[in-house]
Length: 239
Ligand code: LP5
Ligand code: MN
Image (cartoon, rainbow, N blue to C red; front, side, top):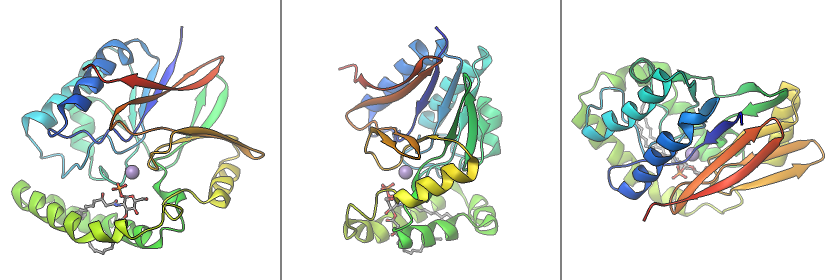
C-alpha cells in the first residue's frame, strides 16, 4: 500500500536513548517501505551545526542516508530547535531541505507543510527571537565558531530564556486560528500538517483540516497519508 509519512518534534538527544531507539525502529521498519518521509522540524532537541561530529549526530545521519540510498525520498523543514541544519547535513544524508512553507501533492490532495511555530502569532517574544536567530549573517558567524563554544553559547541562551517560556500562558503558545486560515488561503489549499505545539489532533474547520503531529516524549507520533486519506497514529516505545 502506498503511503507517505510525517513526523516532527522527536527532540532526539543522546540523553534519551528510548526515543532514539523508537526512531531507529521506525526508520528501519516503516519508513523503509513508504513513498516519502517528511520531517516537519524539531527532529533534534537542539542542532548546533553540521560540524557536530559526535557519535550520536553521525548515527542519526546514517539512518537517513540508508533510507535515501534505498531510493526513499526524505524531506526536512526546520523547527525552532534545528534551524541550523544545513547543506552539509543534507549532503551527508541525501535529505532535501524544504522552505519553511511547502505545498505537497499527496495522491491528488494538496497539503501545506510547516513546522508550526510561525502560526503562533500571539507569541510575540518568540517571533522576535526567531527573527534574530534566522538572520543569515548571524548564522554565518555562529557557524564559524568552534563546536564547544557553540555548545556553551546555546546552553547559556537556553538557560537565560527558560523562565521566559515558563511565564507564558498555554493559549499564547498555540496557533492563532486566523493565521491558519490565512496561510491556507494564501496557498489555496484546505489541508495543513504541522507540529511544534505538541497537541496532536486533527482539527476540522470550515476553511479546512489541520493535522497536528505529536511529540515523541512518551511515544512516537506519525501521520500516515494514503490515497484513501490520513490517520494520526502513535508508536509505543520498544521497552
Ligand atoms: O521548543 P520549545 O517548546 O521549548 O520552545 C519554543 C520557543 N523556544 C525556542 C528556544 C529554543 O528552544 C532554544 C534556543 C537556543 C538558541 C541558541 C541560539 C544560538 C545562536 C544562533 C545564532 C544564529 O525556540 C519558545 C516558544 C515555544 O516554542 C512555544 O511556541 O514560546 O520561545 C521562547 O521561549 C523564546 C523567548 O520567549 C525569547 C526570549 C527572548 C530573549 C532574548 C535573547 C536574545 C538572544 C539572541 C540570540 C542571538
Ligand atoms: Mn518546535
